[in-house]
Image 1 (cartoon, rainbow, N blue to C red):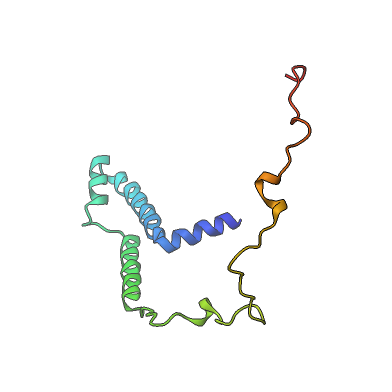
Image 2 (cartoon, one colour):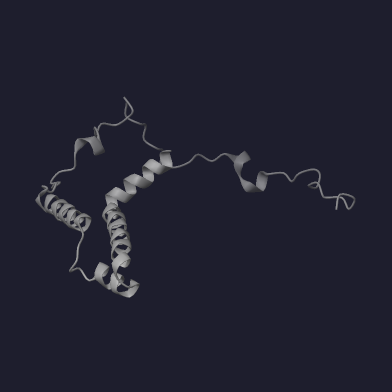
Length: 130
């Protein structure tokens, strides 16, 4: 159900509802015109734009009205970043962090040449497991 709602929202946001409605109108026109004329003539009459049906006229009117509303809608100008995005600029900690030392003290047991090798070799796979 949620996927269907998301799909409908995308269809309406991209304006595909007008395309779907126009397809339905053309299908109805094609069926109607092909009852009284050959199929080739019905196709020509349907798509020539000179013989619009009532549904086609309503679709055109709805599209035009939507375009006018979009052109008349005020644009949002962002001269300054809203505080909601940046938030408060105070530090998160209630106290000032300590300054990092400039030099790290020498600790002999952490030097690489003082590290002892392991006493046993690492485990190996036996041939029986393969």
